[in-house]
Image 1: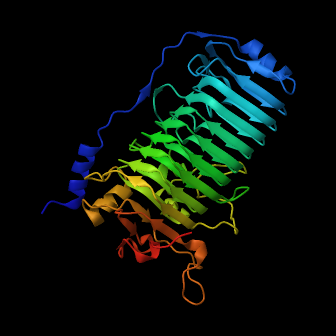
Image 2: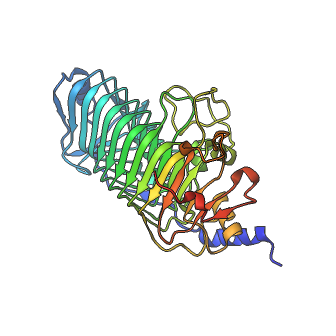
Image 3: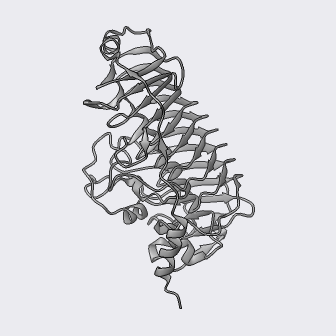
Length: 418
């Protein structure tokens, strides 16, 4: 009899031979750094900083701090290009802090040493028709985040194009009242990620050729917890890119071939999306403990503005954090055909092949239960409901607490509404 592990190696080789994508635009750089830095420093409230057409290169971060009602406007995506390929000082390309009502639109930003655009502690920020990318082959040395508002309120990200992030392309963290719509995200580890954010709408986006298309995460030790997330009318397909996150990042545990993943977040509704050809799983709801078990590499300690780039080993205790997903409602999505083989480059894919063969599920819950999963009368605690209303879609509870021994397919407990 052919050994299982040998078969996995052979199939993994057969199914894991896609090339590494590369972004190689033609550029003709010139420097406007001194003049633009002066404009940033001297900008008065309610002013417009106009960026002309051309390819401009910088050695230092561009910083706006404590500004109100500023518009930073280029002449169009791929017409106005800001490159930080030779950056010497600062981690971000564009950094905005402690501000109010900032609009960023109609330009491309590339190759920051860290994050391309980071906005913190800002009330009201719009990203509109911004392209954020790293050039060359995608790799773990790329910056973590392409578009990165954190600790913000009233965030709008629309009509943007994002590629090459080694963590998340579009990332919103510890923020409230967020709209992410009509964007195109590809060649990132996570295409779009909402993390520890509240009242978030993610809709009408195209997420393809990432490791994972859309992630909704909640992590411990941060300033707020995530809840009230709607993910709808998105096209989430072909998210089978190898995971190129640096060792130790939490997103390093996201399996290649993931469509939508919910990690330990409350009140999430996923509906009217088109999911297709995500070769590990289309939709997954998982606990923090499972991701912790998968990704046990050590990393630096998290801090107060930490994100999915943090890991778990040296986390500060968080007695208020709930590591289990709950109040999840998945319904009325459209699913393409299931691939014959799951993606065998990751533990989930190998598990699915071993347990389900050629008939893997499209939606799973890991089955890890809180001590409060049942009420005192033995009924299911509504806070931990996972409800699925889909037609002709295979679902499963993985029983991860017990080494996947008692998997349940198409469980009756999913037959509910929220």
